[in-house]
Image (tube, rainbow, N blue to C red):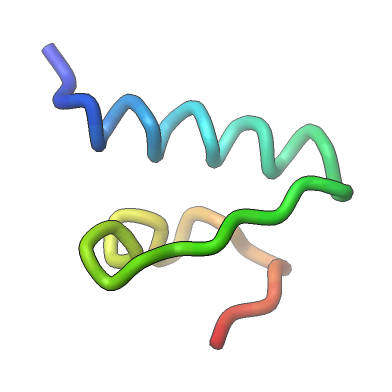
Length: 44
């Protein structure tokens, strides 16, 4: 079973791919989980 964080990352990645208007602000604690998943989106 996925952790809550893994479920959040999976769901949010899918939503970001589906809706270009969506934006997510990531904190230090979860940003590594999104690395390489959001190709084409700006990163800081």
